[in-house]
Length: 131
Image 1 (tube, rainbow, N blue to C red):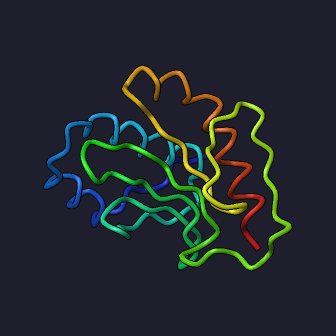
Image 2 (cartoon, rainbow, N blue to C red):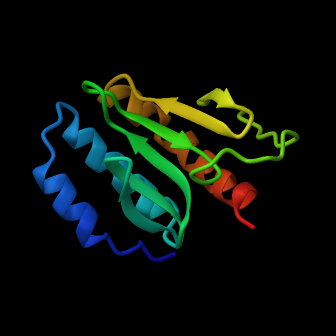
C-alpha cells in the first residue's frame, strides 16, 4: 500500500506551528498517512484533518495548551443516526457522543504505546463511517 502524499498546506502549517509536542504531532501525522493512504489531508479547526474529500473523519486537536488528541467523527456535524456504535476493544477512545470519540496522548511514550492498536482503530473507523 502506498503512503499518501503529504499536503503542502499541512506542511506549511506545521512549519509555522509553535507547539510543545510538535515532534509527536508529526509522528501522529505520519502514522495516519501511512495507515490510511487514501484519505485527503487538510487543515480544519486549526489542525491537521483527514477525510474522504469534504467528509472529515479524523482531526487532531492541538489547542488549548500542549494538548494532543485525535477526534474521530463522522463529519463536521454530528450524525443523526443515534444507533451508531463502534467497538473499541483496546479502550483507546473516550466517547464524547455515540458517533464522536477522542483519543488522548499524554506524552511521546503514550503515543508510541498506542500506535499499533491505533492504526487498527483508525482503519476500522474510516471503514465504518464512510458511505
